[in-house]
Amino acid sequence: MSAVHQFCRIGAHAMVSGMTGVLLDVAPYTKVFGVPATYVGINSIGLKRRGFTKEQIDNIRDVYRILFQQGLNTSQALEYLEHYLEPSNEKDQIVRFINSSSRGFVKSGARKEPSPGVVMAANQRRE
Image (cartoon, rainbow, N blue to C red):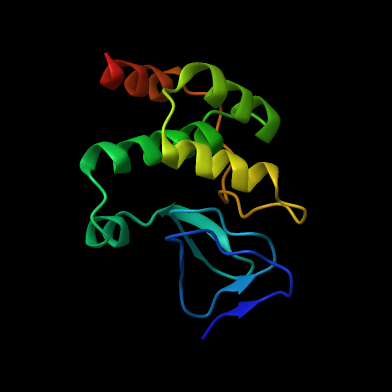
């Protein structure tokens, strides 16, 4: 059993682990765990079961790597996504969800320093 605060939204294809306390919106395609809920990765197994392709899952993973592992604040990360990642339905859905959040959304527990390697890997996969 998990507890979800009133007015919180759970995005499409997200997975909320048992015994999790959700106080903020849970973004699409993610897995959250803990009290309070913390982002622990994308719901890759659920996405595979629902027929998402490897390319779609990789694109989703790239979006969340930029949001959570680049040391950028949310506004900076969203701007980066808009300018540097290829358009996709999944990216657009994530960006719309985050932009429409009035409560804020569940983020990664540990803040990391900017890592150019993550962005470079995402960009190389596109070439």
